[in-house]
Structure formats: C-alpha cells, structure tokens
Picture 1 (tube, one colour):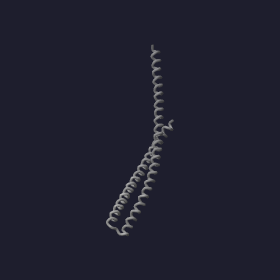
Picture 2 (cartoon, helix red, strand yellow):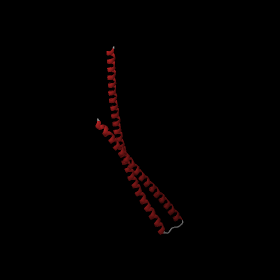
Picture 3 (cartoon, rainbow, N blue to C red):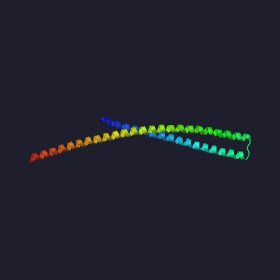
Picture 4 (tube, rainbow, N blue to C red):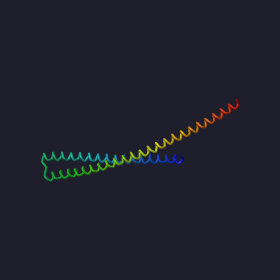
Length: 150
C-alpha cells in the first residue's frame, strides 16, 4: 500500500498536466478556427461589396474589360471562400478530436482522484480502527487495575 501512496499522487499530477495540455491545445485550435471564421466573414463581405459594385457599374455603363476584371475578381473571391470553408471544416474536425482527447484526459484524472479518495478513506478507517483498539486496550487495562485495587 505504501507504493500506491507514492504512485497515485504522481499519476494524478501527470494526468492533470496532460489534461491541462489537452485543454490548451483545444483552446489554441478553437482560437485558430475563430480567426479563420473571421477571415471567411471578411471574404463574404468583400464578395458582396464587389458584386454590389459590379451591379452599380453595370447600370451606369461598364466596358467589357472592366466587366471581365470584376467577374474575374469575384471568381477569385469565390474560390477563396470555398478554400476558407474547407479550412474551417478541418478546424472543426480538429476541435472535435481535441475535445475528445481533453474529455479522455479529464476522465483519467477523475479516475485517479477517485482512487486516491477511496484509498484515503480506507487508510482513515484503518487508522480509526487502530485508534479504537488502542483506546479499548487502555480502557480495559485501566478497568483491570481498578478492579485489582478493590
């Protein structure tokens, strides 16, 4: 049992470290995903702005070359939007994997802590029994002495 007393705290410390690292990794991936989402939102805004500009320019008269430049730039934005969407999907998958990893590490930590708690309660109960036995022996000894004196 002495070995477990030394092992469990070490395991708890390692599990806590791993859970903390998993949480940091999850936080980092989530932050990167949020940044990618902001970039996607910006691309959508540019796309809408240029589509609006194209419509306004078309209504007021636009050369074929300018029209082609607008359409080509909008097509480039559409491609960038699709690629950014794919990147966000990849981040979502990494987040899900990171979340599962964090949950697993947290469960491991909770298991070790539960074992430590049970072990502590068992040791406390054993010590209470030892104390009770010692107290009973002292009481019995005092009782015998008192009886012998009478």
